[in-house]
Length: 336
Image: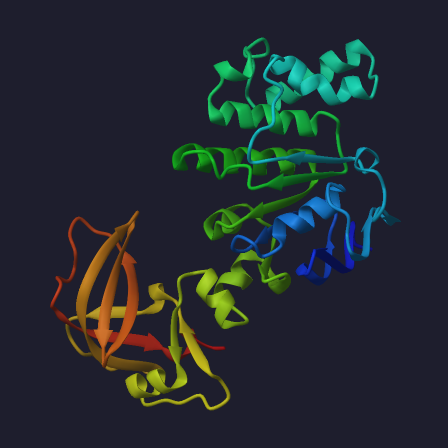
């Protein structure tokens, strides 16, 4: 039996239906990401699970019990928001201890649990600091510690890293994943950042306009997109109409409307060498952009723009204006 279950969950704000019959199951101990663009319904579903929003229809279950109309405080769910939401007049220790005190936990138990939580988020020595004395990353660590110190059944993370700089964000991604694994806590994470979802998740559910477009592991989502929307949102695919693909390759897939090709599977060379099972044609380099350790080429071939990613070396392999030979293996062409 799944640990969390949504049955035909609907949420309306006036005439606007934000969630359109969500059916979703989450297993105990998984790190699950709700991924999608702004306004797709992912945060609304998270708030329905926490009890901060009432559903307009459908049912929600946690650990075998229906919680659709259970008070938020009785759901045993911890939540971390983008805005940190720390009490400005309380120090780190008191912020973390707040939930335990609300439960009238004995003082010695509070001290022990806060100490453990502080260690888990690597804030030893900062227990007496006020929120105004902390960096954004440290404040988010306090918010995380406050959520896990009560040992909730489920941890909800609503875009908690979006306001943090890129370098620190990557560090906190690893920290959150480590803590989640150490605790074995079922975690539901909301983000619009596909890279973040790929790095952190056991399972990804891609949302589009109030519905789940596709679900799967990060590798499944990246290598086997189920629709044009999925291919365009995850992986920066080249998406070609069947007609454009046919004009480039001489091959038509009558059963599909579009063909998706990942940029890293588009191979460029200066010399022609026939390859079995491949489509080959020429194009012209019109742009090149460094992307970390990858160099992205923009190629124009028969009026069609093609992206190609190659490992970035000390200098570009090709210059703008160069004519290059393009090779795409048939096995890397995904029919949508």
